[in-house]
Structure formats: C-alpha cells, structure tokens
Image 1 (cartoon, helix red, strand yellow):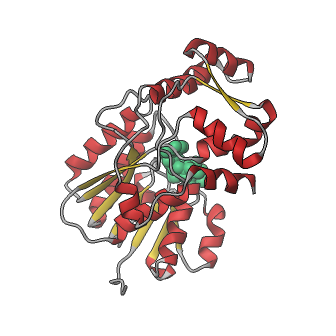
Image 2: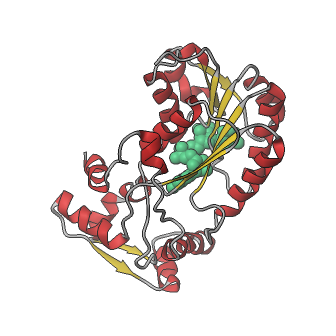
Length: 289
Ligand SMILES: NC(=O)c1ccc[n+]([C@@H]2O[C@H](COP(=O)([O-])OP(=O)(O)OC[C@H]3O[C@@H](n4cnc5c(N)ncnc54)[C@H](OP(=O)(O)O)[C@@H]3O)[C@@H](O)[C@H]2O)c1
C-alpha cells in the first residue's frame, strides 16, 4: 500500500507500548524521517534516533516543550501518561499542543469499557475522553484492556509459589499483548476515517484459574489460582512488601476484574489487526523464553 506523505508522532515513545508503535509504523512502510518519537528522556530513544526517527524531547507537564515537539505533526498517537493523579493535566497539555499544531487526528489509549466501569484507574481516562470531545480535533479512542504482560511479567513469581494469588474471582479478562495493541494503534493511526471513532480492544477472555492452567501446561510446573477475599488479598500484598495504599489499590484492580470491567466480547482488536489476537498460551510461551 502506498502511504501518503504525513508526519506521525507517538508520545511515550521511550516506553514499552510507544516504542512498539514506532517500530510498527516503520514496519508498515512509513519512512523513519516522517516519524516523531516524543520522549521525556531522549537517551532512552537513542536506538530510534539511529534508525532515522525524529526524536523530540518533551515533558507532558511542560506545554512549551510539547508545542515544539508537535510542530508539523499530522496524526498523533497519545500514549497515556504513566503518572496516575497527573494524567488529565498531562493529556490536556498534549491535546492543546496538538490542536495548536493543526494535528488532524489524535489517537488516544484509553481504557476498556470506559463508559461503564468501576476500575479505579478509569476516572482519568473518562476525563481525558471529555477533554478530547471538547477540543474539536477528530479523535480515535483505543479503549485498551489489560496487557497480558501484567500477568506474564509475574511468571517467575507464579512458578516459585506454585500459585497465583488474587481477588478477581471468576472475572474474565480480555487481555492482549502490548504488541497487539501497538499494531492496532498503528492501523487506527494510518487509516482514513471520518469523524470520531471508539474501539473496545481486548483479546480472548480468560480468568485467573485458566491463566494458572495454561501456565501449568506451558511450563510443566503445577500452578493453581487461589482466590482470596479482597481484605485477605490486601493483607498478602502487604506481607509481600507493598504499602497499605498500594496494596489496597492492587486489590481494587482485582475487584474490578471480578466485576467484569476488564472483559469484552468486542472483536474490534481482531478487526484492526486483521487476525485474531495473540493467544494466551503463546504469550506465556514467549515469557518463558
Ligand atoms: N492496559 C494496561 O494493562 C496498562 C498497564 C500499565 C499501564 N498502562 C497505561 O498505558 C501506558 C503505556 O504503557 P507502557 O507499558 O508503555 O508504559 P511505560 O513503559 O511505563 O511507558 C510510559 C511512557 O510514558 C512516558 N512518560 C511518563 N510521564 C511522562 C511525562 N511527564 N512526560 C513525557 N513522557 C512521560 C514515559 O517516559 P520515560 O521513559 O521518560 O519514563 C514512558 O515513555 C501507560 O503509561 C499507562 O497509562 C496500561
């Protein structure tokens, strides 16, 4: 496919999702020189600069730096900030800078089921979606579910304990890999579509008992899921070294899973990918490697 000449920018490009999105854009044939990697710490994006990507320094909390970084950008992938409590201010600064730069579309990584969720992280995404609606720039919402890596990143711990602890009950989780979300984000960024769009993105759903079964099958080590009441799970997290606030927060995330907030029957991810999302077993296998 011949791509029109446009400048694409990705924020958080030194982070895990943003970096994958930049590399995916290159993979799809966008010339590196038409890509802007917006980063707080340019040293972390030296490899992208070596590929010819324009690495521009900006901090979400500094409007002036964002105005310079987003100059001339046609389409922007705004990867949500990783600083809870400051995200709405951060995102508002980026959206304001993009509007002033004449950016024609902002693609934002929101949260699955953002309209109707009890997830404690949702408020800042809902507020950011509101800011986008009021900004007057066409936008695409990528309402991402959990990353599979939230779980596979704890594989060593699961294998060491022989169990997965949680308070998620039988809540289903339509998780997908960061690579899948990045590829879907790139499709959304490259495609021409009129007006505003919203995608509910997730892979095939599993619960934590199924995660334990798949982990056992793939690794050959028996792992079971032990479901705890929220208070007990909070105490176990305290014993593992988390402070009270963090333990309560992590347990509240599981309560949100139990409530069904992280599940979706939407096929939007597979449609944007043009294939099914990466299966859980494959993601566990990759983590083992
Ligand atoms: N769906 C999920 O399961 C899930 C899980 C975790 C997070 N998230 C959300 O998804 C986002 C992307 O995930 P990820 O795994 O790529 O996270 P990540 O690896 O932590 O990357 C976050 C990126 O945000 C940048 N950043 C943070 N504060 C900034 C600031 N003030 N100014 C400019 N850049 C700033 C970081 O820059 P530095 O490299 O300089 O720190 C980094 O590049 C996260 O930020 C979070 O909002 C989703």
